[in-house]
Length: 263
Length: 276
Image (cartoon, rainbow over all chains, first blue to last red; front, side, top):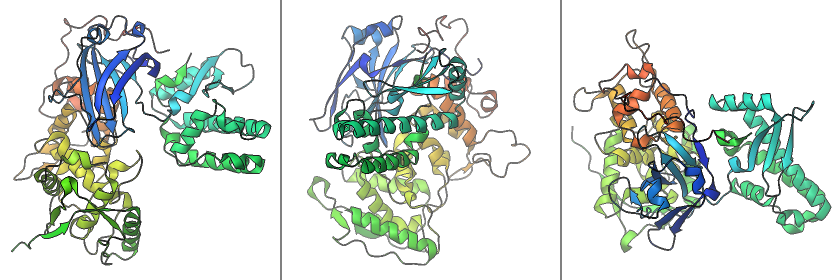
């Protein structure tokens, strides 16, 4: 059997809206209480596949087994660590910044059929930036569209879309990083436009809330409401935000998976 | 030669001020390798660490150790005090303090120019934390026990840090038993008490015989690619080997164990609609 290329088995992303993971953070240690698939349609044909949950907090990585997809859908599953301890407890060293990942694994060849992103409380850049193919761009190389929930689509023509996907498969990240920085610049520019029009309203605009969390996450705290009165302050804050982002690892590691693309 | 008696020290944890002072010292020692370690044991730089309500004391051996020996001592210290060392890894103040205690006898001995401070000071956030030398040694040891991961742990000198740890620990492949088993099979040779690494492990001093053998970097690259498609913890070592590129399958004693063709599921590779 030759080596398969990566990502060539039709793996699908399990989005955060398609499952619910319940964790009791009040216990010591916290407990993984339950898993529920809110959209079973994405699991059609996967009844016998195995369900795993991974909890990760820096050095601590614990994997749990939940039986098969069918067990979870029929609520006849139990959560147990795969290390044989039959426990559904997290580690006492795990705090609420622990991230979780769900894997649905083929029962025979152990390939991953469905995979969630590693999710925590902070928004993921991979969720905020999507590349979209278009046939109506004309002479434009690319353009941006910001959605009401803050997600920005980088709209490119179909050929460029295909070429970028190939780059991602080959793990060549430089072009993505350029576009990612441009996207962040666009998000900040939209923020600036909003702040110029409505002063502090920009802070509470739902489009910018996830972006402000991303900047906060890299140590660039949002501009206080009172400072929005001066446009110069906002411009300076935006320039600093871009610099902070460009020098942070997020700018290097984000948007390098297939989930970045939308057709 | 008689071995010097170990020195016993209280286990504390650094405050942010303590971490800053330690970092400052590391910078200064880089310019002046003979600079003595300052006393940062005062309450100005430290907090108490009292799990179970008692102050713990740790022995600092005064003779040189190998990486796995030092890791075992630290893990045993926590274990004998009823603490699972894994539960302490997130404690930045504690592990930076431990680096401080072991600094001048083990991690950067007299006359040695310290490397980047991230090797001694646990970094905040999720970036570079795995580069902390002392934690990395213990982490590997706790992940797969004493008989696996030999090729990573058998570094003679605790003040030398190769990038081999980082190659493995920086990616989510470290939890796979099979990966560690393969690593040892490919790159570890039994040779006396402690064994030795293959020269091609870090792509150094390759002989003509070894020139086509893949280095650790190649191995890690292949495993990282597989991890995007396969659930590595579910693969046996033979099955994992069967999925590797030919250049990696050709070496080592572990036999590859591909899926029998007749038993192959016709749906494998067709897990539903393509990626949206």
